[in-house]
Length: 271
Image 1 (cartoon, rainbow, N blue to C red):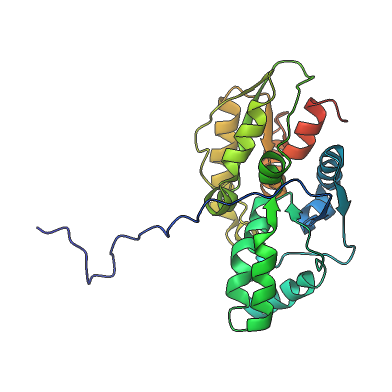
Image 2: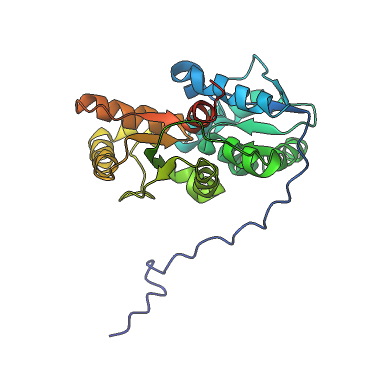
């Protein structure tokens, strides 16, 4: 029997081609920070610690007060017009030719990849979107490749598990950047854990629409984190942290996750 599935609707999907490697600029004197709605509402320390890390590198951080959401929740829920309205409001805020640094891989991916789809039929806006995408960086990527940060560990030995949001991993490769930064900390041992590349079950509105499935996914994730032997969990995405920490709290566990910016700052004597 032939296994060729052509014409059956079950043809093997092919991954999109990889992007060309980015060419990184010299470290700038000024950047914008997009704080994200989740950081603003639930993890303000992660935003402030991101600013402190950048300022420690000699960079002036600009934070437009009118910023709100990148539009991802509406976009992934199928509310295209609403997402476009939210995205258009953000586009007006970053007019200077400074890098836009985002302490969330999923939100950075929205700027880098999905705004293009939202504005593909608006030539003027699309040109603005493409220019902004070219200067948008997830925080870990920016620290590693633009700032070329060198961290000195001042903490006690610790085992850490790194969780990377599934969209950040697949769209931006941020798990590589996070691993490289943790590797600079001499007393930090990063431990692998099962389900490392799997979604934690948050997925923005997904966890609200399909809570039973989401609950099982985060149970797999938290079980793997507990079994890893790590005493701390680090992630660069606060949506995932909200989901994972909430599940751990409900389970009565003491293990908690911390944003990568806060962990790096604390371990390198800056907090």
